[in-house]
Amino acid sequence: MSFWLRRSVQLWHQRTLCSALTGTKSYDIVIVGGGLVGAAVCAGVAQSGSPCKIAIVEPNLQKFLSNSVEQEERSFPLRTSTINPASQRWLKKLKIWELLDSQEIASFSRMKVWDSRSGSSIVFHSSEVGLESLGSVVANDDLLRACYRRIQRSAMSKQSKIDFFDSGVDTFQWSSSHRGFTEWPVLTLKDGNELHCRLVIAADGSNSPTRKSANIPWFSHYYQQRAIVVTVRTEKLHRTAWQRFLSTGPIALLPMAGLNVSNVVWSTTELEASILSSATKEALIDELNKAFLGVANDTILKKADSEEYPPVISEILKGPASFPLVLGHATEYVKERLVLVGDAAHSVHPLAGQGVNLGFADARCLVEILENARMTGRDFGEISLLLQYQLRRLPKNLLMLSSLHGLETIFSSSLGPVSFIRGLGMSLLGGFIPAKKAIIDFASGKIE
Image (cartoon, rainbow, N blue to C red; front, top):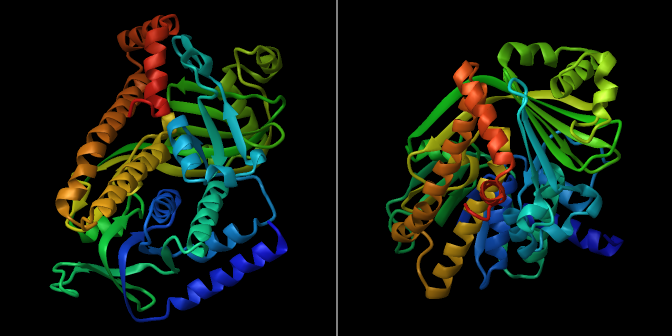
């Protein structure tokens, strides 16, 4: 970014934040939560046609905007997302993907999944379904930075008016009347601002305060497991997504941008997660290699020379960190002038890396519906309009949630008959191209 362009963005950034002085303000749309999904919704709405007044409410917004102006000294990221082809196409349409440096994207065209107990495996290739890749791994910070650069460019070009509120929400309620419209949502922010709007989009995560304030029920299942996340260096470069199902849960090795850099996500018991989190780097490297290769140190190198197994992990670059594994789902996605997107509506097991892709699919659907409403002069907050979003997204999200939960249940079972059926199923699938194609289409977002 040139000096003058960077300077103009910085000055715009300062003016935008300073314009958010304490008081009462009205918007067409208020987005609560400025993470990946919330930012993508904003970018989509801001870019989709006639001017629209939008507010983003996010306590970490100052950090997000600063990162979007100029990247801080790069370190090894810990939090990444696997972007499937459908999400990538949409991000390209929004001109977000082009704002990522090619060195920030690690695409993979091959995926191997294997079972530690039966020894059965299945390999997926993008060429089997005519795709360039099965997915791309991107650091969350890099993708978020690209989203906010796109939002800022839309705002600077006057496509839409966008205000940023670096604050949390204190209260959320519906007013009795506002400028002739009844029951407009009112959000009182912790910084004292009061925001009135036609539509609230809740993108504030699985513990969504907005969803709770609206009294939308949330059902959840705690797996009594934690996911360990580690950024590592391997001895060889690879462009394969590896996933091995252990008796305690799946472990995945995903390629990242950088010299032989990969991201590990290991779902395991709370006890083992605690042990791994406190282990020395040397001990953690040993445990990771054993988990992937299933052998002792003296035979790891020989086994890892084969393309059938992942490369040896040689260094811990960042982490470990961990988070609890919880499945969750809202009973409804919409109310009058309120819609839930992303983790505020659903949370899934990370074994297939589908969490953010479901969120982007929500965002894509909602942006399309809102653009159609704008073209026909309809009110954004009409419940009949928002129900279109719920009817399109809720069944598809439930299908993905139930599929991932079923996989987790099948692969976590230690019963002999289940293990036999699991191994037989993987062996049969491996040689049946139509079935593999259907799985890839589902995971890539072609069939949502």
